[in-house]
Image (cartoon, rainbow over all chains, first blue to last red; front, side, top):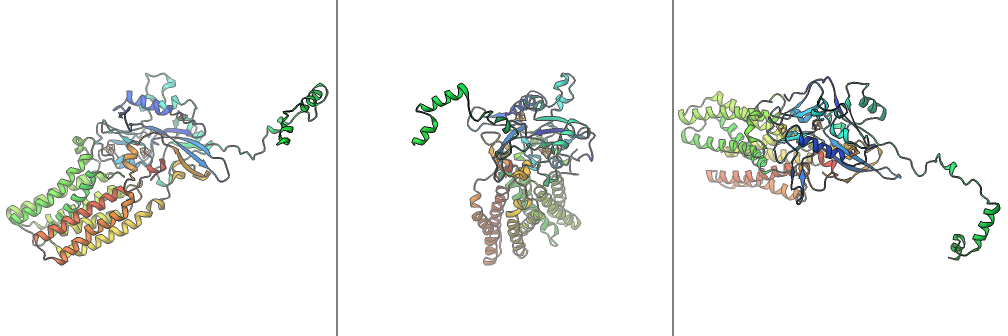
Length: 259
Length: 291
Ligand code: SF4
Ligand code: SF4
Ligand code: SF4
């Protein structure tokens, strides 16, 4: 049913840490792998070795530059997948009931047997989180690895989304936002987790942690005092050696004076 | 947005066909017998032809019946339900006129209402989308309805009404274009809000996630031929309104003249619909540093 549940018992989703993501795209590949080999239609590729290769991906990593006036530019890698919005516009527009949001955990899914491939849900998603598979003609989107997180055939540590399990930087976290004590709720509260395009009122479940502010060249360095020379004037053997060496041509000081 | 031929044909033909059905439904002295047959055949052919064309872009048209189930939330589903209801009621009304020369007036009025309701549901499929600010306004419904009613009047041979209504539609089109040109900026979405990083400085796209265009860019980031927009707007206006008006004013109203005016009008509406899609900017484009 394309009615949205008024509340969901759990709010499963991801926290993505823009501070630690290194833009390696490992999460993209593990997502493509898992979701091609498991639930639903495989994620097809078109002309993979030809001109203009194209394919279906449920997770993509953009790269942005943020530049504040008078500061050094900062690169931010930006993974983007379905945010499992509480107010999901993609669900209500679906004419067939193929798109739905689960009452028990808030995951937004597509029933591929009912999908007519009209594409309207992708039009309604502000984030580009849905892609119509060109081979199968059905809508594909992040399932939050619903076939992993509850899968008792997998070892405990693998019962999380493939992207989270893979991320080498620990930039992705999975959990229940309905529980204020959960890892994701605590991270969101401590680091000021943000919604994407809040002006569109989609109420995304996934949160993004902003990059931590970087040092500036003008800042007082706490290490600088430790780098001061221990002795300004050399004495004894070292002092004698310094003098003798300075007499030889090729000393930087004399050179610069010559020029 | 990618201007898919199937959707342009669909909204153009079924819009005018449903408009014509509405005029036939409220006609106090409707045609009967063969005259009724040809009139209704034209209106049904346009409407049904458009509807069939709209299924061409589906990935799984064989499951189309499922699209009638979600009318409680989905405008696309409502459109399906309304169009079938309108065609059924008008079909009965037409049968009464063609075979029994008997207008069943209540049926005509209900069918006319359902026909216009169908046009409204079509317009709402686009107008509901907050992701496409240019469409996301009640004016989109005004535009679709005014064009359907004006075009329908033309095809139904109501030349007097058609002339007045064409001017109304032209006004709706002009206002829609004007408002549309600032709609995206007015909504305030940009890379700053899209990434949440806007309060730290200027955000710019450094690298796309993929090296060649994907489904999202093909479908949502259509920038080809935007530079011809103003010329195309003028062409659309000329064909849609000016030329039909000129023809109706200058020439005596007979079948051929009306057909000529209608053909020009249809070509104009199709141009306007092409622009409707090609000009529309989706928020997805922001993530690619494009619009
Ligand atoms: S991110 Fe897009 S596809 Fe996912 S729930 Fe939100 S609107 Fe729907
Ligand atoms: S593409 Fe499939 S899931 Fe999306 S709106 Fe159409 S029928 Fe529903
Ligand atoms: S795997 Fe982790 S670090 Fe690599 S792109 Fe994905 S989120 Fe970023």
